[in-house]
Length: 261
Image (cartoon, rainbow, N blue to C red; front, side, top):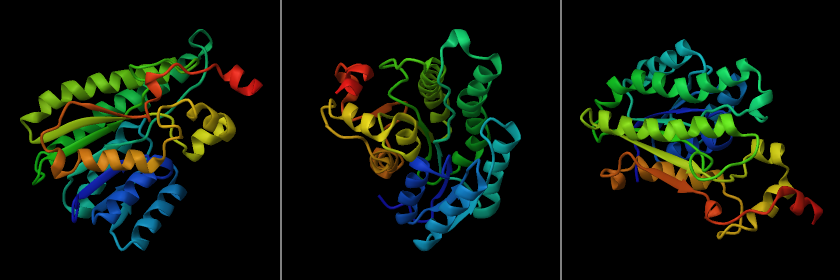
């Protein structure tokens, strides 16, 4: 699965899954365009990529900002001359009851997790369509999208369900443009952000109930993304690959019961 000299734009590449995906492509010889809302984290990712001997540049910006997404794509083309793969990993999350959620909080989720899909697809399509081995567009969704419900995540879960449906329709429209569109749905992945939010002990105890009895790793998601954008997956489009260790197939205990021990 060599990506030598392929140009790959990754949103949310400053930390977590996005950074691990970026480094995985770098090890395969790709030229990486790092998009990160926080410049400091993006610069760290670029430095790690360059330490591997690969080329990288930083195009900062907030995915909730229309002009920022336009500049991401243009920055990639200006720096490396084209675009072969786009991986949309960035997203925002809001916890809370819908009845108590401020309008502007919900609006921000819509801009970040829904409108960004349209903007990124529209801006990148003219360049992805010129890719030699078919352009690839990957959306990082969630097992929350259509398969389960976690309390206080309605806005996030609904936005990911939209993502899945959007990708299916886009795969049909973009097929004639030489572009494959797919989704990866992570389960409970042990990123720093997730462990800080949920708590490491609780996360690991939840994972003990999975058929694959461990937390997922960012590398598990990177492996799935690289496969779907490789030549081995040239006949796959409009699909969603669930990478969750089987978590959505089993009944989960209540958090309160786990904490009681």
